[in-house]
Amino acid sequence: MESAIDYIKEKTGNFVPEIGIILGSGLGDFADNYESISIPYKEIPDFKSSNVQGHKGRLVFANIDGKKVVMMQGRYHFYEGHSMQTVTYPVKILKKLGVKFLIITNAAGAVNKNYKPGELMFITDHINFMGTNPLIGENDEELGTRFPDMSEIYSKELIEKAIKTAKRLNIKFQKGVYVATTGPSYETPAEIKMFSILGANAVGMSTVPEAIVANYCGLKVLGISCLTNYAAGVSKHPLNHSEVIETADKVKDNFKNLLSELIKEI
Image (cartoon, rainbow, N blue to C red):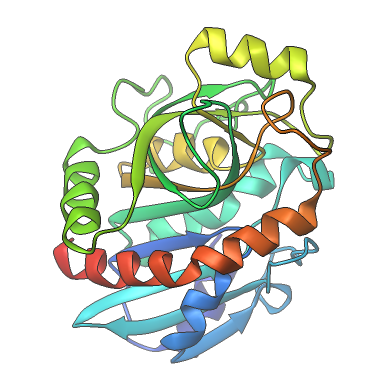
């Protein structure tokens, strides 16, 4: 990590970010409005290129309303063949750079039939259905304890701030439990029915590894899902990634307004 941090600091100088944002599929445009310093992932030691549509693959540093922010335009996914340690490596780097608050966003399928595509969902809790854990392996005591508590991964304080902000902006939102699967195939109708019984409201292929590691590192986390489609069995037609990007694009103005105002409140 030291070589990555040294390289980033060579580019950013004395810039110490307090807020980190991981921008998911179709949501990366937010960073373009505030670009100050950008570093492609491929230039940073041990970072990987992001190969999924809608992910630009770079770190963007910017001052937003007096707050120092670092944004990840895109992320790595477990389904791309990366290890969990690689997937969550950037979160550890953000912690080392000084980040205290982490906003994690994603595009997700609605499991709850009362939730609609185009709405935002604030994640209150998650179900890890990925079959593994990013903390497996030798523990780094400088980052966190061997057996971290996961009672409140998603900060209630940040959720309340997000709710107040959304209400003030008249943005439609939901609250709920996010379940993560490995992907890259979408889930079957039977799996979605199971997730619904388990209490999940939305499903996706990311966020949970990063949230676990962020909580382990002592960061306060806010998770925001952009509901881009109904999940299998809820949807009336086959699922495809183009629909995800298209729906995310339609709601990106609401998303940008929410993030801009929320940064002021953190």
